[in-house]
Image (cartoon, rainbow, N blue to C red; front, side, top):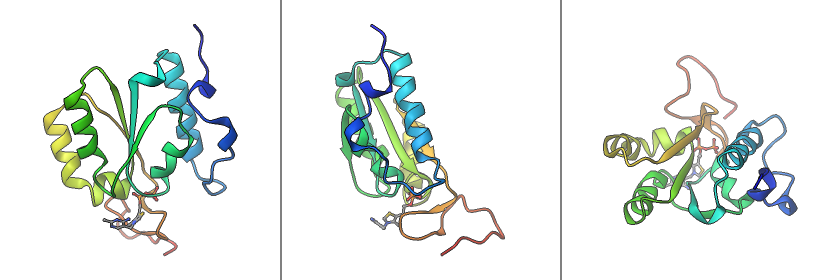
Length: 145
Ligand SMILES: Cc1ncc(C[n+]2csc(CCOP(=O)(O)OP(=O)(O)O)c2C)c(N)n1
């Protein structure tokens, strides 16, 4: 059966709430396209999100979703995968979420190597709270904060 992005994205919720020029919508569309290409059943996908602009991605998805505390998405996803390894567990994190406040969980998730799919939307700053520096902000650069 051929699938398309609207098997995974809730069309009624469009447009996305992200700001004009933000790449998050393009990333989410690409993820939905990947789900379609792999012909994944929505029931077998669990998308785990943290907090932040990118953490809102689950608002638009028809898959199972788990929206958890800032920096802890990989920890929650580890629990989901440990209980049911057959699930396709996809973890969506901002750079602040995944690599800064969540930096330790990132290291331990890599060490455990449980076959989670971790996707970091790296906008090089803490977007939702106004542009504070994150762990990926390039040295000597300025954000709008
Ligand atoms: C424990 C905790 N600390 C701080 C916050 C405040 N907070 C909410 S979103 C956010 C920044 C998110 O930035 P990032 O993860 O890079 O995602 P983006 O918004 O850029 O997509 C912060 C610091 C929070 N919600 N919880």
